[in-house]
Amino acid sequence: MAEATHHFPSDFEWGTATSAHQVEGDNSNNDWWEWEQRKNGKVHGDVSSAKACDWWAGRAEEDIQRMAELKTSTHRLSIEWSRLEPEPGQFDNAAFDRYREIIKTMRSAGITPLVTLHHFTTPIWVAAQGGWLQSDAPKTFAAFVERAVGNLSDLVDRWCTINEPNVYSTNSFFLGGWPPGKAGINDYYAALFNLLEAHARSYDIIHDQQPNAQVGLAKHMVYYHPRSISPLDGQVNRIVDRQFNGITLTALAKGRWEPLVGKKVGVDKWRNTLDWIGLNYYMRHNTFFDVSNLSGLGIGYGPRPAEEHGPGGWGEFYPDGLFECIKRLHRSLNLPIYITENGLPDERDRKRPRIMLEYIRRVWTAVMHNYPVKGYYYWSLLDNFEWAEGYDPEFRFGLYEVDFETQERTLKPSGELYGKIAESNSISSEMVRKSAPEAMDSLFPGGLGGS
Ligand code: IFM
Image (cartoon, rainbow, N blue to C red):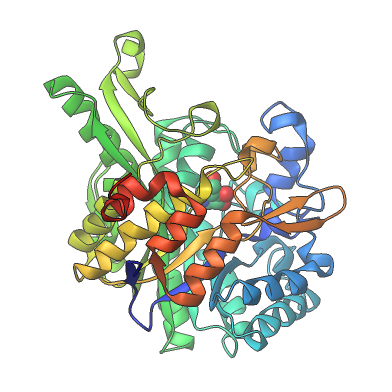
């Protein structure tokens, strides 16, 4: 029987993603490492990231061969500021050499690097100066970027300045769960403002050195939806969406800083500081007026209990939200879009094949409707250190399973499937039938006649 196939354009790129602190190991010079050593209950099991996936000590190379075996053509990694500039203004040439080695290995394996310059970690010396709350932080970061780009521009031309500025400022400066453990609206706004300023400065610095560089930022979007048609739920939705998504998008699209409280200002130099926009998508949240949280303005959000979600209420997994977020980014910014992260925590890889196919179908639908989605980076190549969730087995995101005792890697069924998708540049009913038959009904219902 002929199988239905959704082909992607021939220049569509398939890749995987990781970040330095989550895979390198022994990243002992940044604020996260210090936070982990405190054993203050803020990291699941009070563990340290320790050796992580042991990339720094030499295992990056074997994992790059795995990227090639998956037939992917690009990988998003980050470089660790605290390794490269361990003391103010002092740069470590040996650390630059190690990154050059890793990136050269990628290129020889046919993998184009997309390099992120800030992915949640900050050098201890910067944190000691007040970190992202001090107004000098963007300048300090820009000096690092200048040096990093100067050193790597012969090997890298696709840069991501900041990963998820909204998630970082929320968890580190508004909810207090990540270092430096601040919890206040003013700190949240100060950090987010400084991160956006750091992005804009980095954009100019990279282009000054490398006019053909392609520079973007990875925006984590939650798809918010009011629980009901009640005006109160609608109002909560507007507040939460603006706080998490809207402020950052308005800043980048219009050069306007429009916090929910505090002074609104125009920051014209933030406009036109993107060559592409990255979308990190994982979940939909239901928003509602929460009578039990009147001290918190009645703001309530989270997954719908009846819908599919991950461990501890993580999620809700909602593939249609990926298409909605692509449309929204296109409306707001009108730029090439890369899906710079997408995935799910799934300890036993039971849901991942199906949900991966559902997500990629939405990407295909977007491309077929002329939305400028150019590539897709799966989060993550391999299980790794998941921040506050540490090494909790429930929070495994990899296409490869990692045994953190032995560093052994095992390809998961979802990894095998992703390899087929990347190799064929398509998803097909045959893949669904073999890897996630339970999704036939939703993805290729026409093949179910007579059953
Ligand atoms: O692991 C993280 C990553 O560092 C940033 N985006 C979300 C991922 C999964 O939680």
